[in-house]
Length: 274
Image (tube, rainbow, N blue to C red; front, side, top):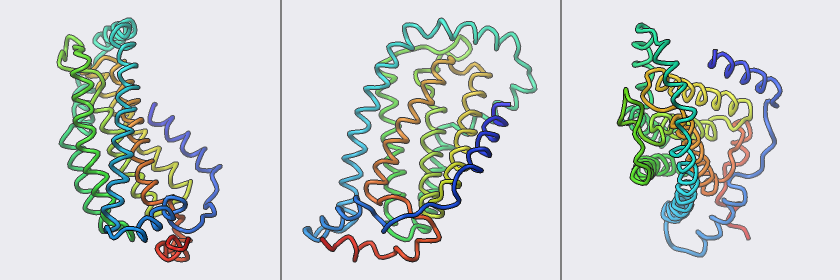
């Protein structure tokens, strides 16, 4: 029912969305600024872009940690009021056959599953992108590092035990976080290079939301995490995803609609003109 609702909302939004939107030259304000910087510096474009990407991601990671630390205080001290009734109801109504299905479904958020998807996507996107081919591998590689160590920092800050059936479960849910941020960033990188249209963005977002819902539902059904840890994982992944999208957009500029890409394929010539 949850995935059906997500699909229905996506259909309604896609029908109301315009087929395409007008767009300017590739790179926008960020591209012009990057072009001027490249003129004034002898450093390769990828070096300057990597520095910009790293600064934005580092600053965003600090903000994400601060927000999740504040949320963690609320979850740790008051979360069990919500978690215990949900846990007891789930244990009383579990069906063995469905639990076996959920054990397979929840593997999509495992560490090596998401890291493998990120590695495969990085290789494919480096070939698909027309410009800045280094950017997708760099962004996805940085995501692996940042997500891993930021999650460790949160877990060292909040030593929260999971449900009795899975005491190692911690705040926030790593599986829910990884599904949102890894598959969300992959979807964004594909969308901005292959389409750029609002309707395609809605469908890509719906797929990521459906995957995130599946991960949260399966982990809750298997009582691997408290319910508030799952909600926190979704929020955590969403915040990280926003940071990485902002960083990529700042370096590469706004996405260009595919049918206008051929007319705006000369960002260097445009951006280098003051």
